[in-house]
Amino acid sequence: MRPSRLSTTPVRIGELVSRRLREIDSSTDDLAEALEVPASYVEDVIAGSRPIDPSRSDVYGRMTSFLRLGRNDLRNCLPPERNDRSRSGAPGAQVRRMLLTLCEPATADQLDRSGAAEFTDIVRRLLDVAQGAVRRLLDDHVHLRLAATERRTTYPEIRLRVLDFLDATPGTVTPEDITEFLAPRIARWDVELSTGVLKVVMASSERRR
Image (cartoon, rainbow, N blue to C red):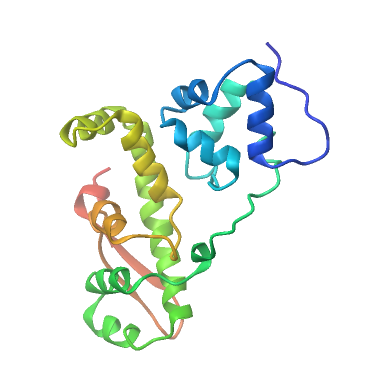
């Protein structure tokens, strides 16, 4: 079956998803099953409260296939309306302390006295590194299924946990995110404060991948 033909007027992703579900006579549960996520994820996408970064997630590809869309239809949608101010905010105090424990001590002392904007930019760059490594988990189905069994939860819930971290920003990243995803992958980091050059030493398990 050919992909749907869309109008040239840009729409938001939620509008497009909702319309296509009606056109192909499918439900949010059906799409959630195709994406291997809880139905709440699809509901958030439709509501516009969950942005999707196509470079860090497999959601666009799966959604495009299920909804029978053209290759670039989702990418051409309007960006989500972000009403959550914390998305562009600074990291919380506990997150700041946890990240500084992974930093070279001399630099950590200086950063502990630095402004919020400077540290927020560093956190954003550290997240870029960690999220790039965590993205590979979406392709490691065996690892995710084992993790789901160990935690006595479901595979879709584990995938959602990964997707939530891939969507994290300095203002929304949590201490649990640091413990579960960032700390196991970044052994040590440092930054040259005069130039802004960030140096990251990946954990040995990541270097072997």
